[in-house]
Image: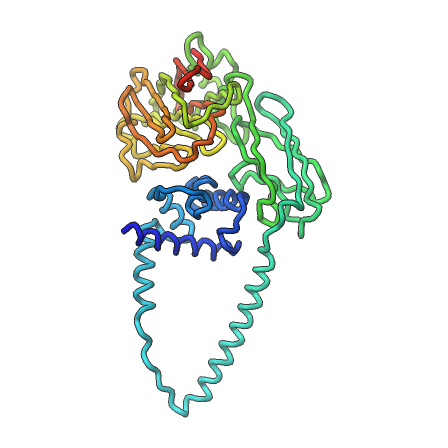
Length: 422
């Protein structure tokens, strides 16, 4: 069974390589894998990190097998509903190919008609070959050494403008963009002859800025957008609503009161996503040895906020670690994330993340270097294998649909407390 899955996986990878036309995956660069990560997320809304994709392609040694959610994402990227649908399709397709073709005997009076078909086929093939050749020329990988790209944040606060310095003078055309993060929608077109570009970041976090030329990522680098202590926001497009310090920082807890929120929006009828951030204010901590604990409460359940959806996010220099909570009846809507994979409540039992928010809920997340464990009120709710051991935690975020509170926040390793508040 394992050997069969490996065969199917290789078929899937081959089809992805054919779709991308980037050549042999064994020769792809780190930028290529990051671009593939972006494309998969764009097409499937599922995040697979570049490091995860490298392991799947055998570029990084790893003995484990891909998670089903990872296989589903790969299958969706090439047009199938999920991994099982891809396997069924391949099996049926293989059986059809094995059926021996019937022997066809052509009669003499069909000769002219047959030659006409051959001639037509030749013309069609010639056209397709020329078209394909043109497309192949357009997708020749660009050399990273021909481009330069760097950045510098202006302030240590939010919003924060970032000055990008770039050199794209060797670009083959005028399709040049600077992309703020993994999301291709956050691209801004820049001029080939220019060297500077500025962009505003409205939320803190750890981003990967990209220089995109002819739809290829030719250069990228990490970009930390920090906060000056705690930052409170209410989601709003295109710019978040920034809470004043006294509106969400209380003596013993983070807590944006309903009265404060009502001064900006009506949470009963409008989207009300309240967030508390603290990014870049402690020494980065490896995920191979950490323990995080806090008490939280979602204190709004009116209108369409009955599920009281809440998240704790450990922001890393890779994918974030996300600990979700809700009332018990809404756990199907939850999603866990580790630095290596995402687990959906649609196809996993996340019932232990269903809680009663009338009381404070204790949440703990920890790693012993082999796995990440998620605890809710001292009960092990879930655990996932840890593969990307070099990933570091750089910030914290609390996210509430409606409003919520957090206290007794502590992040540490075996030897030291790295961050503590309230």
